[in-house]
Image (cartoon, one colour):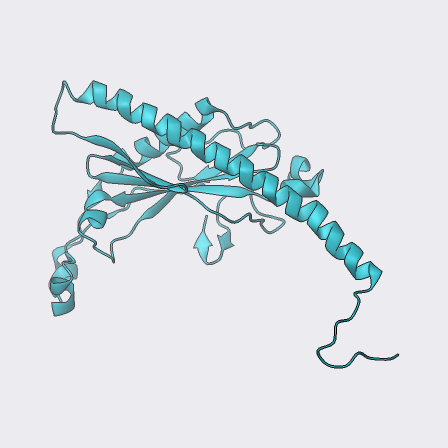
Length: 242
């Protein structure tokens, strides 16, 4: 078979062009649609969060005006809700992902019926101590409270700590709605509020380095230990346990 000279253009075989075309037609178009669904869902999440902050502020201000509940926009893919000593960070990931065949919704008949349902956009809700961000204590832990997966048909799968009001996770029945998004935010706030900060024992913090002092890292910082995860969520993806 003759070979082309190095660097010279060659015509791709028709079967390879067909493979590329099929890949673009099936996966790429599907992923673009999923991204649009996820962005629309995140916009809805942002709107219901703003409404919830206004409602809660009206309730708490007459009782104690020092208790602040704030919505803070960051960019198109991130916003924060600050309340008391807690900070919820909602982040939309820009990439579309899939999972191993035995993870979460993957073995369901609904997902198996259409390969496009194997791909998801995802929105994460993290809980940090508000002062960790304020004082830039880089070693303070944050917690993934919940993760929302959204597919090409605007169905969702919600996973997270047991304190979330997790629905019956049959994606076939779970459609993204404003009410569902509000429940997601409310449940994340309840999970954060109900898990108090626990300080470490004194013997664990008897030593402090100069670096910690210079960087304003409080070695007496506590951590939230009340979060517990659903017993069926023991899978590892990129080193993270769910």
